[in-house]
Image (cartoon, rainbow, N blue to C red; front, side):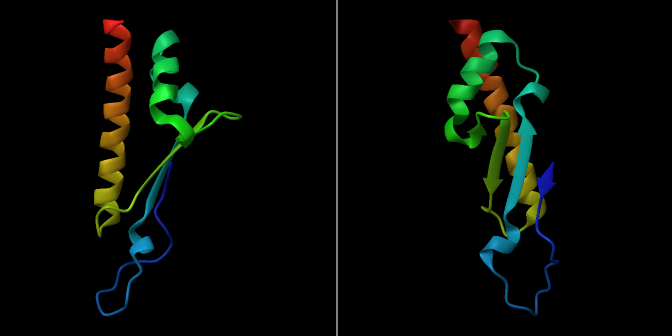
Length: 91
């Protein structure tokens, strides 16, 4: 689930850097992790995970384009998942 703001970019208007901020929210139970992988992932993401409902929230505003920020967040999530799986396999 992405939240990328409500306004469109118009070059002739002043913009706020927050106009390009994108939020990715996903639930821990919806991720393809098993057993210890899930515990490793939780330690990796730290405070970005709400303990009560298992919601992971990642945000990005690195690029002046919402689409690039969305792509960046997807890549970051994929890297986190790969990292948790790798660390679990080498333990």
